[in-house]
Length: 160
Image 1 (tube, rainbow, N blue to C red):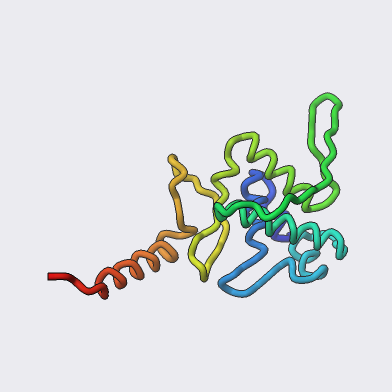
Image 2: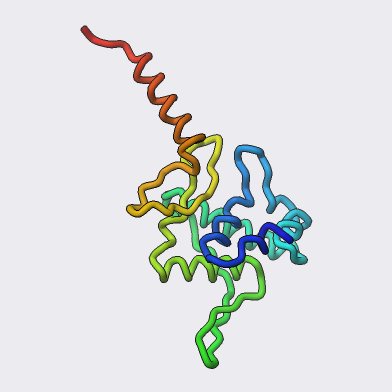
């Protein structure tokens, strides 16, 4: 089963899995080539679908990091009206865009965040009650930041 298929269910899981196709720490990019994108998604891909996915991922990572958007990304999504109203897309990028729309409508898109550690930049979903979680892992990235801050304070000259 592909990593994308494993993230089925909550739209937040799909969005986070998509954002984490870029692993800054290990230098792995699942959208590096058409072949790697096909392996990650479990579907045939083309140069066009890869380029669309990269643009979408870049824009979503920028947004999740709390930075201003660079430019708009347009993804084709169909609105199907029959017994119910449904959104449908025929590419992985369209399915991710639908998941993003669902999160936005539910008021949960702001909970998708990027770890601020420069050597990490892992995407995560903030489950905290007040949406204040900052690090992907308090035990790893949060602890490193606290140790770094402590060292900086300890190294600062004291006036006396």
